[in-house]
Length: 118
View 1: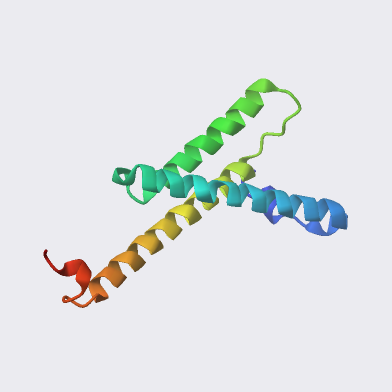
View 2: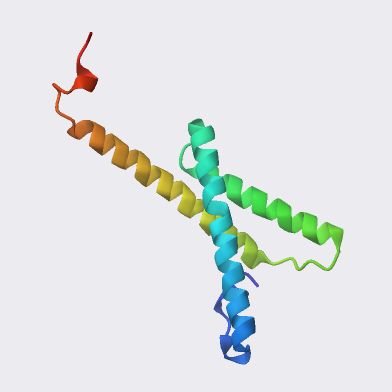
């Protein structure tokens, strides 16, 4: 069931197990932030949603390969959810950076050296 692993009662877990689970989910999230940012800057024509879709498809493909290998790996839809949230965060950080750069560019005075012709 999607989200069940993210929202279940952690009181049944020991401290070490709970800590490991939380660190794993944070790592899954953070792993896709730079991937989405790289995708966004490498292929800007795909817009803001391109990296999010890429993150979703990449995460799904990882889980499908794990399922197909049947090598003791656990297939979990929560990994797909967390990875996609990480890709979304990376895409939003890129969008915020682009907007900030545009705002700074608009605030420059017209007579600065960068706007003068030689």
